[in-house]
Length: 410
Ligand code: HGY
Ligand code: MN
Ligand code: MN
Image (tube, rainbow, N blue to C red):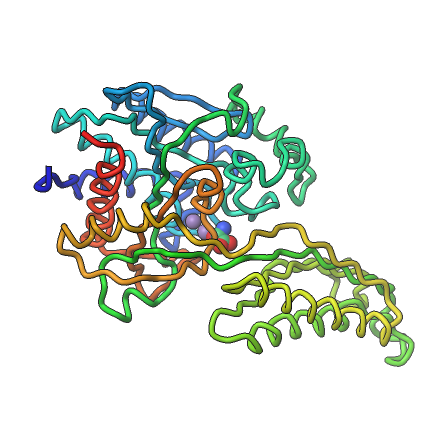
């Protein structure tokens, strides 16, 4: 069994083929959650799963589970997967790699005629990115009970389309009750999306933990007025106040090195006309850190600063936390299985704390979970130039195969 290896070329071909669905001119992928392109991507991966003899289940939030039977059907499956929804300027590998690496494990077991004791499953989680619909990691979050199905169903995109309507429209509003789906362990292969592995010259990242995350919606209300006649001291310029808060979000993160993170990625100014003083600004704030205590201190500093700006400006400022999960450790048995597999395969590895959120966080709330990182070029992700080396993609999938076999048994 130790000589068993996946077919790296087959995996790479599938990655490039799936990347054609939503391909952008710059070589990235734009496949937003629950769009027609997401449906096409789902249909493609499900078709590959059926070709591999897998049984398909879809739950009520659109999570897809593709099962390969085991010799002992009484055992809960060992599951591996990720997401195929992307950022607007996404890449070929974020999420897609984890889903197709799991499929490649199945294809390898089929090709070698290997039966596992526990069933093996490939999972595709709905709306991991949280770009079109908030909260982030939506499908896995409903699955583990982090938030309710109704809360997720009601989430609407910028055009007012809801998750429920879009799931129905693309044909992936399944029947299984989310979470009523046993897992004995969960593994997720993913590009690191940062520079640590590449800088250290390592092939495999063993992921012990993930940073905690807090997402906020912030809204500043001023008053539209003419950019010409309105004297500077009489203005209620919502954008000027909003930019102070945006700057402070980043300043707070810089006061909490090395893991403090602060990002403002989404901004809407109304009416967004060059000669109208903005009357309303809506924007997002993304804070992260390695301990809940530090994340809470960053939260408190942000709220205090907004109180101060609200008093100084006299403008209504609304802030709402719309996504949150605390920092978490992955299960020692899964982390150990990944490390043992990397060592047995002779890959240079190191521990890497994940700055990015992953479905494995929520899967880890209902079963032991672990992750496998591989380097990405220049540590760049959430960018159309995202890239990875075929040999690293193959290595990560070999580690996934052997970590899963360690747990599933043969
Ligand atoms: O935001 C994240 O960390 C993930 O990419 N959804
Ligand atoms: Mn991802
Ligand atoms: Mn992502």
